[in-house]
Image 1 (tube, rainbow, N blue to C red):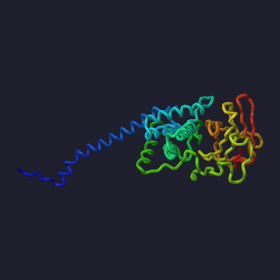
Image 2: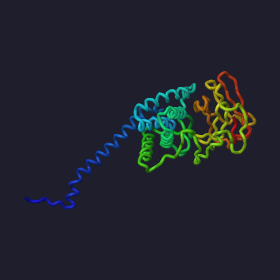
Image 3: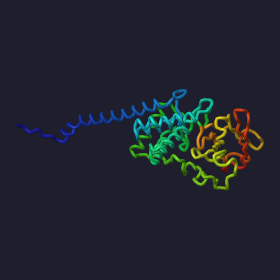
Image 4: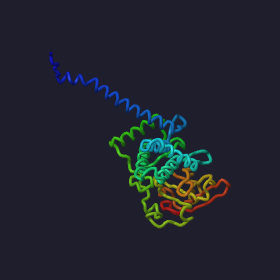
Length: 308
C-alpha cells in the first residue's frame, strides 16, 4: 500500500474548492441581505419625479428598517400603525406630509409604549438620521420641496440613496463607523451648534425670554434642535387654520415665507426658515395668515433670542 504524501502545495490545492464554496456562500448571504434591505425599503418608500427620494423620506424608511432588524415583523407592523396616525396629523392642505416629524413622533410613541427601551430608541434614531444623509449638511434632514439650487432640498435616485444608506448601516453593524449620537429627545448636539438644554427650557443664554402667549402657544426659536435654524411654533388653537407664515422687516417688506414642517410639541404647527435667528434683521414681524383671511402678528425685537 502506497501512502499518499501531501506536500504543502497539495494541501492548499485540496482546500481551494472548499474556500471557493465558503466565498460563494458568503457572497450569496451578502447579496441576500442587500436584496432584503432593498425590497423592504422599496415597499416603504414612494419616490417622486425621476425616481428620487429625499433625506426625510429615507429617514422615515430607515427607522422602520431598523425596527424590523431589531425587533422583527410584528414590531414593524405596530410601528407602521403609529406612523400612519402621525402622518395623518402632519398632512397639510396641499397633501404634503412632513414625514420627518411624523416618523420622529411615532418613534417617541413607540418608546413610550414600552416597545423599545430609551437606549434602543436613541440608537435607531441616530443610525437612521446618519444613514439618511444625502448632501454635505450632516446636521439636518431636508425634503424634496423647492426650486433649483435650494439649500433646503436633498434628493437622490432611489438606487443610489439605498446604496449609500446600506453602506452606512453595514459600517455601523461592523463597528468600522459609529453613528453620531442624535438622541430622540433632542438633547444638545455640539457639532450642530444647537440650543443647549437650558435654552430649550426657556432661557436664551443672552437674556430672559420675552413673554408672548405663554407655554404651549406661540414660540419663536432662533435655533431649532434639528438644524440650528429659525423655527416658529404656532398656538394649538390655530392648528389646521393656517395658510402661511411670513417674516417681514421693520418697513413691512416680506423677507421670507416659512416652510411647513408638520404638527408636534403640543399639537402645534411648525414652520421652518432658512437661517439661524442671528442672521435676520432686528425688529422682525411674524405674520400668520389664516385661511379665513385674518392675520395674527407677533413682534420679534431681536431674532437671535427666543420668544414665547
